[in-house]
Length: 176
Image (cartoon, rainbow, N blue to C red; front, side, top):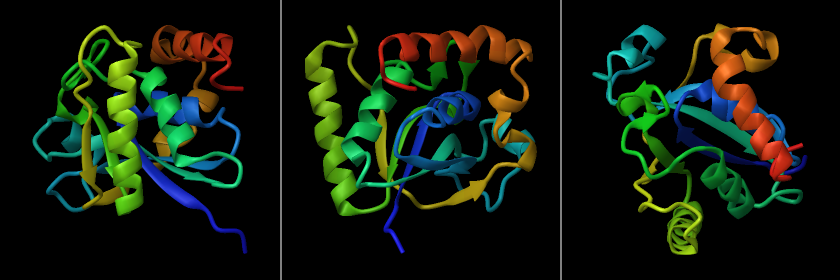
């Protein structure tokens, strides 16, 4: 059986992160979830209070023979604003923070190097505030969050937030 890897990334609303990575070659699956908090198996309602310590994340399973972890992170840096603390657009709160949850020392080293390189590239005019931390907790989000953009393309959040992001990334050749 082919070896796959997992990346767990938070870049604002997990519907956005999921929609982006569903369009990246070499990504096998994307699952919205919650990571980094202190409550076991929290609900979306609990997460939204900002009191659980969790971030909305996407658990991305990928084929490292088709796409590297570094390439996964390159998409991450361009798919959200990693320079805003606990905020992406109108989504505000610690649950929307920019965060990379690493699963191994190798991922940690790659993430730290990638963050430095991206910060020095001046792609973003302000300093990157993305947190890089070891994955300590993870739970899947409720089923209705799965495949959200694909199943709800006419929902206002999808039209006004996700679609423009996807259009931009597609135009730049970052996603398919």
